[in-house]
Amino acid sequence: MRIILIGIQGAGKSTQGNLLSETLNIPYLSTGHIFRNLAREHTPLGRYIKEVMNAGYLIPDKKTLAIVSDYLKRKEYVKGYILDGFPRTLVQVMSFKNGIDKVIYLKVSDKEALWRLSYRNADVREDETLTALRKRIELFHKLTEPVLEYYRKKGVLVEIDGEKEIVQIHKEIIEKIRKDP
Image (cartoon, rainbow, N blue to C red):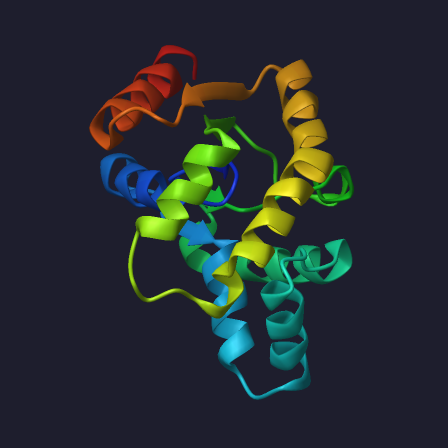
């Protein structure tokens, strides 16, 4: 099964991705984790990604597609995956050739997402300044909401209230995935 998790930063994608990975025995891959790892590298690509992320912008479509496509060629993702943070734009959707079974949208208000990110831990990452977070939320509404509409029309979008308890959210996701394979 190939699943995409979509939601604004702070919606709980990593939490649900890891839970789904355990429950469904499918590997979880977060583009945020990939990009943060690359940003730590002392390479031109690493420095570029770090600058873009710290400013709150998205990595350009062409670079994102190349990086994600390269990762998904690895043998651990051949039988399926749970992908978090991709695709984020219609360009990425139209260029992504891997086929998707379900797209899970964790719907969380901007206010709730900012609250969660502000209080989740004292160790704030460089790409989680208030300015960067607000920019990323703004870009989500502008660029990613059309992606949701695209998947809604294709009949693969599953909308979940991401403001419920973690266990309840996970239960609803599993029920909806198994109900409508």
